[in-house]
Amino acid sequence: MKIKNDDIMQIGELAEMLGITTRTIRYYEEIGVMEAPQRLEGGMRVYAKEDILRLKFILKLKEIGLTLKEMHELADIYRLHKDSDRIMPKLLEFLDEHIQKIDEKMSRLASLRKDIADYRVRIADILKDKALA
Image (cartoon, rainbow, N blue to C red):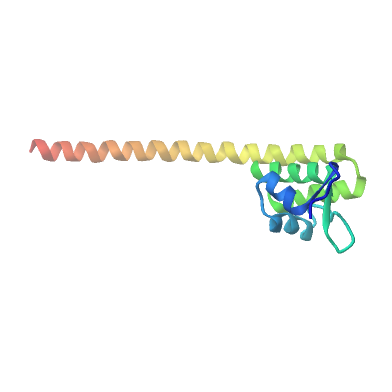
């Protein structure tokens, strides 16, 4: 059954629009990262524009590497204050931590790449010496 109101969507429509499963949406609700949506008679979930924006925000946070624990912390701040601006300082803190982790990982990977390249040169030299002998 499709809802005719352009301001709300059913869970299946929302999942399809965002390229996720209905189970993912329910999971975010179950763990408290996303508040439960309104329900129609019969228990059908319907998502308003604000719910859709929040879910898109959650998916973006996931994409950039925030953990469910971090997302839950942001959700708790939002639930307490009902103001998106109140989560921004904490979000900046999380983003700075993730940038630092990425920088550290890139440094380790650059070092590993150098080690592998050096090792490759040594092996190539050994093969070259054996071929000349």
